[in-house]
Length: 184
Image (cartoon, rainbow, N blue to C red):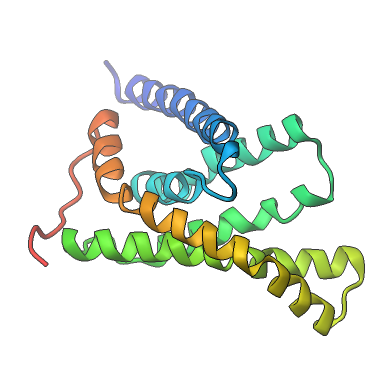
């Protein structure tokens, strides 16, 4: 097979996989809506970013788009345009070759922190859309803090899956194994 054909085949494969991963994000959110603020979205966002790097934005924004189509493109949806990109960006900044023991802890901690800060990350859009002043914005964050703490705890637990899931996804995609140190 020629190089051009191989490249085209790889792009088609990735396009299909990205569509399925975006759908997986959306379906996982719907299935887990019975649990308040507990979901797999942070874990999936970080996993996709570790494996696909910049191209991870494709399944992430497929999820954001499908979520808007399903629930309606309303004011609640606007922060989704940047909230997941923040987690993607932080994940992109993490060292790629951390020891596995450290990676498990760091990935779970970052995922948990994103959950805890979700309300604070959402707040600037709320303030702009509803004309909140600084004190009102802080009050809005404070009222949501118990839900954000629950979000963070859920993200901490599912965040422990990021390393094994990223290793599995890399293997399933046929990507070369990322060289990570085995010891702590």
